[in-house]
Amino acid sequence: MGDAIQKQILSDIFQCKYFSILADETTDVSQTEQLSLSVRFIKDAKVHKEFLCFVAVSSTTGKDLASTILTQLSQLGLNLEHMRGQGHDGASNMSGKYRGVQA
Image (cartoon, rainbow, N blue to C red; front, top):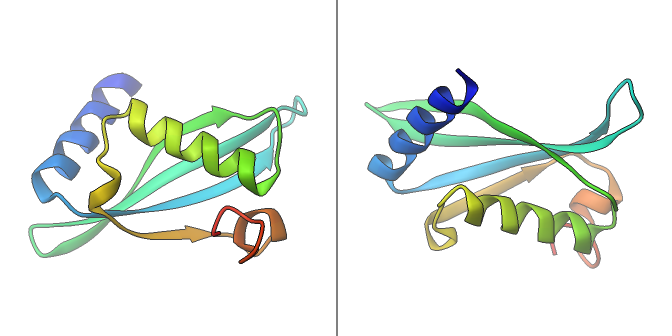
């Protein structure tokens, strides 16, 4: 069921073309580091924010998180040239302008 929902969300994004991503890193109850990826896009003159997936991560450095995000977006078939924005939490490994994902 999750795959069908994700495919529909991706289909909506492909039709709308432009999107932005929202990423947050967290540790679940089993102490597994994971990254949640959500996407925002405009469809039918309304802003939609949809959850895409969780991705397990082995390192939480800005460089490794950025690499994980780029790889996952590519695997989902999203064209990075159509990405118009990115949002992260305030943690230095996410939003640091020199070494974080933002950089």
